[in-house]
Length: 419
Image (cartoon, rainbow, N blue to C red; front, side, top):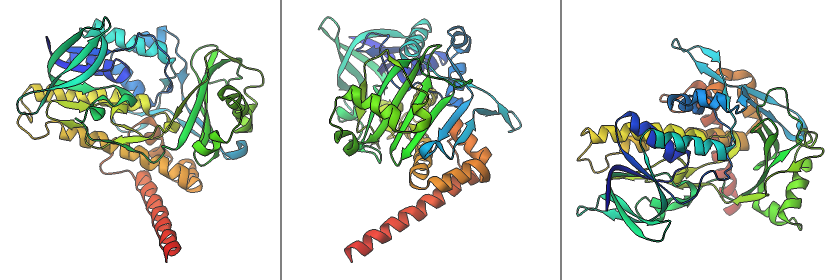
């Protein structure tokens, strides 16, 4: 049996960053990771605030050394390559004024290993193995995990807090500790993606998004001096109707989804196998409790279009470390749910992004007006990841009004259909 302050299930960015931020509070942690790093992963673009989390971990110098492409913003091409809009990466100074800034695009195999290595250098212990069971104290509180080690043996690790950073594997939900994993709004989609060389890049290596129609789009993310991550997302029915294999589907879609994407890939070389992810939108609504909490994708994933996966992994890692540090110091120690405030704050941010995505898909004309003309600064904040808004900004309020009208219209149409 082993003991530690915190045991973290998952060594990806969410888990490794949690360990880094815990170390800043003087809290020991053990990370359980079943895969050997480096390993392939998708989700390579950072928001501005995600870049600030990298800086907060003390990794800015290392990022610049490794020559990860610098990102100054995101450019979205409308259907047919028309109606484009650009959102720059900007930060707020001490007086609240917007200033030019930058973040990064990353090859995830390199970035994830860098963060994990940094966590170990800060004092975290890495155990290669798979968490298989949750341990509970006499009062029912979570108090650790059982792990099957790489050599097949089984070890119990006892801890005051268990952090689930297992991503889409949703370890604590599957174990019946967190609540059941529910389908999200954007689950009936398929993302098909790979890495390519030979793509024609813009002068600035920013994220490019190509809109075809609702829930049908593509991404173009430079991840090193030669390589670009390209993916195409489409409704499941559309993907299933294609009669060829996944590779040929991917190659076809690169030239079909939007002319602005097609002209950038006249003759590219695939340098990774073509992979697919389907039905990826989900929500675990109760993800904290006595002795446990979840970080990032282990409790919710909305839609990847505006690159918030890494943002929530790193931001919630910091929030989780702060909540755990307070708990270790006696805060909410006897509460029914010691981490309820962390859960509410995490949901606040993700709810805002779901509102943003809903508006983009359901009301693209209103969205374009807001981002271009009416609420430019507010949308710069939203795209940067300044999403924990209470009270909401005027731009966010406008999004919610438009979404509410759309929902009311759908309800009225449904009622008429059944009348």
